[in-house]
Amino acid sequence: MRRDVEALTAPGERVVGGPGHAAARRWLVDRLAMLGLEPYHGWFEWPYEHAGIRFCNLLARIPGQQSALDPLLLAAHYDTCGAQPGADDNAAAVAILLACVDALRAAALRRDVILAMFDAEEPPYFLSEQMGSVHFYHQQRREPTHCAIVLDLCGHDVPVPGLEDLLFVTGMESAPGLDRTIVEGETLPGLRTVAVSNEHIGDLSDHHAFRRAGRPFLFLTCGRWEHYHAPTDTPERLSYGKMLRIRDWVVRAAVDIADRTLAPEEGYDPTPTELRSLRQNLGPVLEALGIEVRTRADIGRVVAGAIQLFGV
Image (tube, rainbow, N blue to C red):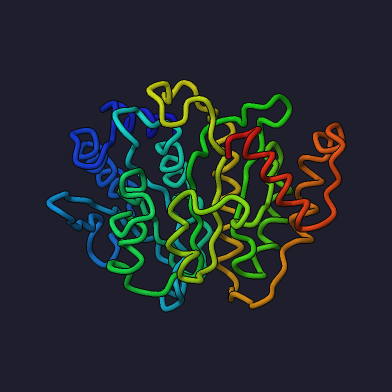
C-alpha cells in the first residue's frame, strides 16, 4: 500500500485536467491490468466530458461464482482538491482497495465485485452531475448495485490521544442486514468502528449517488485532520498499520455482504446498534465529559460534538 500511495502522490497533484491527474490515471490502468482484473464491460477507462473538460472513471471487475447476481461495488476517488499530493485524500483509500483484490479473489464470492476509482469527487464538481460517482450511477452503470462500500480519508490516525484507531462508518441505516456487518467487523483487533447514520454527518463523498438512489451503502472514513486539503498531505504522515486493518475490515465486510440479500426497509431504526457502538467505542470519553447517550437525539448531539473535535 505504501508503494501505491507513493506512486499516486509522485506527480504532486491529481487535479482534474492536470498532468498529475493524467499520470495517475495511466498508472492505475496499468495497476488494474497487473492485478489481473477484468475490465468493466470491456474497458478500464470510462471517459466523459463536460464544457470541454475531460473526466475518466476507472472500473474493473473481480468475477464471482454467480455473475448474474447484482455486483458489490468498492469505490474511492482518485482526484485531488488543488495542487497537493493527496496521500490521505484519497490515495490511501485507493491503495486499500487495490490491497483487497487478492483476498477477494481467493474468497470466491457469490457475486462479482466492481472496483471503482471515481473521478471528480473534489470541488468544483462535488455533488454535481460531473462528479464521477454520480455520472457512473446514472450514465455508465450496466447493472443494479447490490451495495456500495465507499472509502475516503482512510489513511490517518484520528488526532485525539487514545482514539487514534477509530473508523467512522455510516450507511447501516440503508439496509437492515448491514448492522450484522458492522457488529462482526468490531471483532477485528486494533480498529474501533463507530457506526452513525449518514443523516448526522451528511454526504461527504461518493456514497452520495447510491444513498440518493436508495441503494444499500457503507461509507468509511477516519474524518478530517490538520493535513486535510493541504500541501502537507504526504505519504510519510499516513498510518499504514491502520490502513492494513481497514483493508481487513473491508474484505470481511465484502465477504459478508456479497453472500446475502439486502433490501431497504421502510421504518428500519438503527438506533440500538448506533447507541451500543458509541458507548462501546467512545464510552470513557463520554463518561469523562458527563454525557449520557440514551436516545437518537443524544446521538445527534454526540456526533455534532465529534465533528467539532475530530473534524469528521
